[in-house]
Image 1 (cartoon, rainbow, N blue to C red):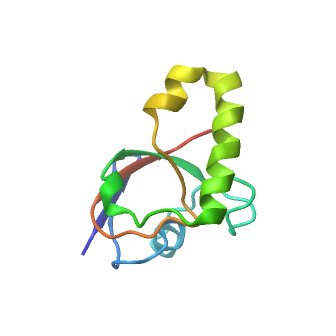
Image 2: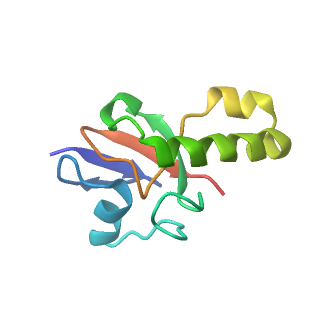
Length: 103
């Protein structure tokens, strides 16, 4: 079973489970909004295991691109170029990942 590590906690999840749902079902609620991939409130930084998440679909890609534009103004180009941003409500887990919410 894949493991998700977040905030120094580790959770075993089922393969192809949506990251947000998997953590919520195990008692950890991440920041969220619409839970459909449009608002970007559930944004996360993938610290390890990006290859263990399914490739993002168009909705997630569009929202992440909008977030990157916002983050350039707030955190700078360096943050955006070095940070793997995904949406917890859309990312499906294929293997072990380590994440942190982005505020």
